[in-house]
Length: 152
Image 1 (cartoon, rainbow, N blue to C red):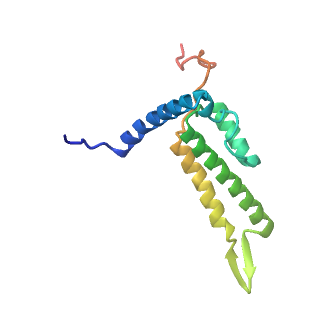
Image 2: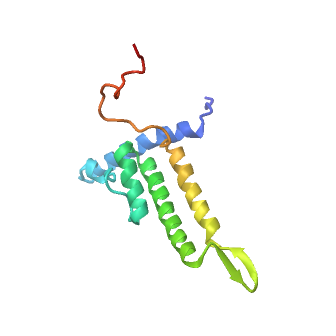
Image 3: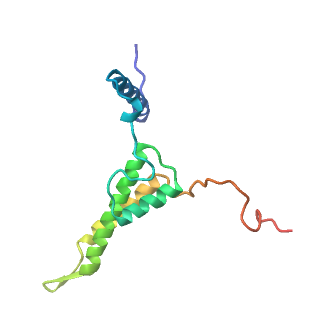
């Protein structure tokens, strides 16, 4: 019998549900509650410790967008950590100055490129998560003052 070609995304999509089913079967054999072994991070708390800038970004995004899958939460956590790193580098740059004068030469601060790389990573990551679009609003209602733009 000939095996049909499947794209890696398709195989990965099917692999996850089977892994969850297998985990539930194994835990039921061992006498454990299957739902307790598959606990995810709640939406309000990040999966790891973040600094003030990263935690602020996490809270703002989680209040406006609905990210529930573990991959999306991990990507967001990585972006928040990169923002923390960028802010730490920014404080070092502000302390030392944007340029350093060493032995009669003027050079850029070595942390400038790392700060820029971390900020670029944050922006690219947020775009990949689809957070550059307007957030989903919970309430449905009438348009704001002025109606839909028609004047009589």
